[in-house]
Length: 473
Image (cartoon, rainbow, N blue to C red; front, top):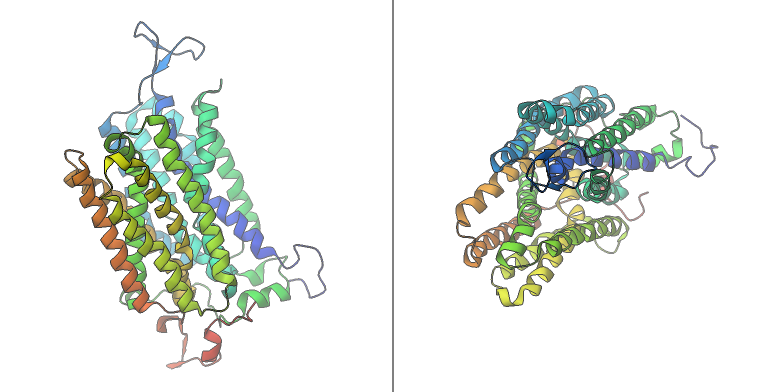
């Protein structure tokens, strides 16, 4: 560790480098998961005007609509979801035993290899493609727990909002990178296979960088200074390495249950927009295909901007207490989006532009979520944040199964009346989740975070230091 005399603009900024590398690595795994959604059309056999399949991209050809039928598309999505579900709890154990440096690196390596072999798997047999997707899902199961560990180990209490806002923006960052890159490479002379090779190469580079720079404990980082270490640890108390998570206490904690309920509502809403936003705009409201893409993509980009701004605001606002800020930010994210979801179900087709505005408000308001239940989870669970956030990953996987089933059961005829039931279901879930969260929300560390020694609770951290103050750095 360097002494206080260290100089340079990054001498006391190593945590920001960790934040940047961690964000890019998490987004890289998400990009590897997403890339097949943008290359399905490119992977389809090329057909000339006579209906004959052609291999050369130089011929006059056109693509069929997709390389896969509906059943195959379902298998591809389910394989990734099952992989994530299967890996969520094992990754918690591995993180607990070995820390994020090695475990997250291995997860990145799995994602990199699985992405690199996707073209070969596709050309060989569909089952091999499904297997590669399964391992992409396995690696994705490491993302949320990694967010928790980076926040608890490297973020100061005053910067939880900033860290959470950037680390949890992997979905938006991955889409903003993967969409244009896939489009350009698919139309290039290198073909759709190059999309996977570029993503795999970038992923491999980022995770080598991660392994080189990241340390499970900031005190062991070769470039860490006493000044920065004091900022990171101020007000946190002692954190034991490889401390076992008290799973039973966490799973029955009322604050954690409120956090997970809010997360379920928010993730169901997010999955709806990603899966069915364009379907609703095109098939129910009658928008042109080229317009629906923009109407879904632009709000996602705005969501990212609002998320970063709200994360910084959550850290910098000092005239409200942490509990008040979390309630306000969570209400903006869930209550506002819930109300507009309910309104969306009653807007007539003749005023379709109002539906687009409602979707835009929903996406922008949910950007405030990082200052709500996400921040509450890390402040209350502290050193066990990785376990709490890994369960949010588990909930996200469940939403990937539940959302299609909900739409399938209700929207049999694709009428506005049927979609209204879906909208009201999401709206009520968001509103109820927010009300329950606001009742239980707190910034106090939970009882399960306090260390015990000889049967007594340690008293080296005064109660007043467990709360954030506006003077903490």
